[in-house]
Image (cartoon, rainbow over all chains, first blue to last red):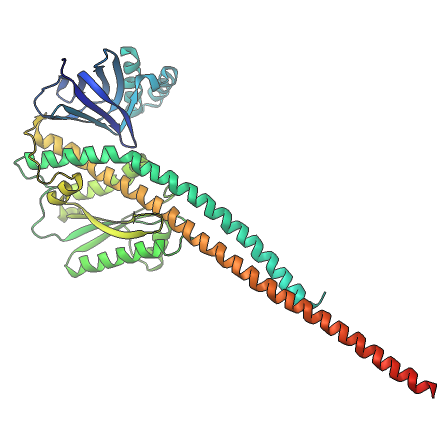
Length: 124
Length: 305
């Protein structure tokens, strides 16, 4: 039996995704990290970026998270983010427009958010 | 129609109109309570996970973080009061304000200066009227607070707590809000957010006695805690804002329900009075007619002679 880990991806105001997975890749402040079942207990600070979850059915779920934390213990993984969106929920055209707008308006934070969204869509 | 009867009729009409309005407000508030409750529930997973993470780091990290250790001589405390923008909610705002006033008095009794931050127009108006200087005020989102609003409120508070006390920072952070217990009960409560008391946090997470795993921190325990605590404060403020809004709507619903009931009673009483007045009018008219015919009969009987 392939080992599994339980993943909870929660945003501040809702639960975004939860289920069983075999691998989770996230970007912490000190680099990308991959977590598989049986990993040592871990608590890290996430960078804005895409999170890739390989589910036990073999599917891949990609989400864009904007800051947050990853915590793992007892084969339970929690991804906490103030804002988190699944790649399927992201409107690529809207994100692109937001990126243009942010670039012209020189809003660094908005530009970063839009970039993260687009990257998540690209990974999908 | 007699003058008195007309007055009653007019009053019945105006009370009926008021009743319609309060009834509508009651319905609106009832539907908003449900919505607000749903929002509280939706925010719970994040809050529990965050609380668990905070407990894990704070107990796992050996070094003392300024946000988890109590200052030896706390001299200034921040008090955040959550009130609502609009009234018509019974004792909702006055209860919250009273709890805040008590807390401020207690803190001042302990020799601490209290910096007051207020959310909601009602609370702001209360303190402005008493000419108390407020450290920060926010209004306009109490009916449906979003996480961005909680961030906006949390920002200056976190800034204040990170600053040294001598430079105008604060040692403690208290929050006063109205806890949503049930549709019928909402209580004003105060809680100390910072410095963090770990026992309470653990109790909240519901795992005070379980053995916690030894975490690997990425990049380091201190950095994680530094990043985690502001989010924790924000999440607590967000939760308090949501509960407060649910409580406000529940209080409004109750106040409007009793207003509607009272209007109904008033209408009943007034229509009884109006009926009595109409009856009295009719009786008077009959006796006038009877009296009139009797007088006429007497007069004709006299002329016949």
